[in-house]
Image (cartoon, rainbow, N blue to C red; front, side):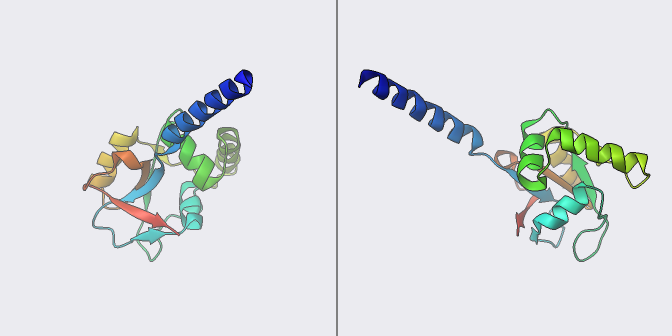
Length: 142
């Protein structure tokens, strides 16, 4: 009984700790003047995989990337794009080799991406929700 209770307490503590870590989520941001309020997950995938160069409804888009070692990058590609880091490297190797495109430019971490998007009307980025302020607009994913 004591062992079972001890295991249950440890499991509960680990579950609560992981819930805290994953409570923050990645959001898609644009310049506040951008007329969009929502974007489809499919459009985000196409933009970040180099298959689409325009916002839905028109206007060039400049996607901002984060370094692959960031929490934001991992959450974004795992949950929204649906590719692991290995799959992503392989994908871009094929696209670059075939001349079909280049990956989005690495801008920096959340704060730097937010600053770039806030100062560049055509920019799009992704950052952790906890980093949001009134300098950028969050797009709802549909």
